[in-house]
Length: 164
Image 1 (cartoon, helix red, strand yellow):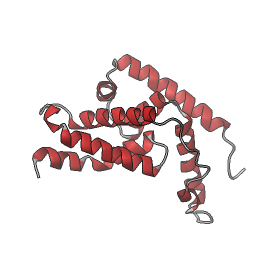
Image 2 (tube, rainbow, N blue to C red; image 1 turned 90 degrees about the vertical axis):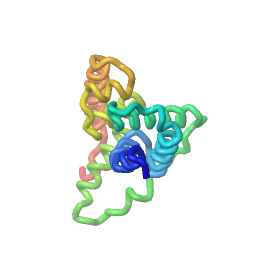
Image 3 (cartoon, rainbow, N blue to C red; image 1 turned 60 degrees about the horizontal axis):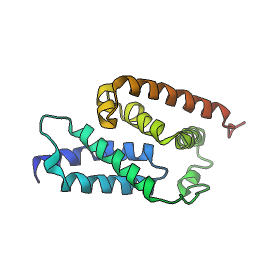
């Protein structure tokens, strides 16, 4: 395995986490990771050693997701994914419900907001790196992130509590 392949393989957990943030369900996230891996391996010569590999991979993922969204006429609505019912009756059900509430709220955000939340808040990229992934100025990233946080808080505030 080449060094680039090993470095890409080391990024798999972060890639999956980012994909789960911007995609609507596990299957879409897995497909996104697979598509990004394929693109990265096919176009590995385009990566410039000395630059951040994670930023390059996340940019590939963002572009792959945009391509996928554009190619779909309309998404099938999924009322409740199977995994939503896995912990019903479990002592951790409330924590699980909170996680589901946040996932639903993030899914309601615009695509731009989901992507910036995924890069900065979920994956922890520095603002400069996230701005490079999105090919936008850092100031645009910070204002987009502030709007995304506000939108996320508003959505969470309007969601009815399952325990209420």
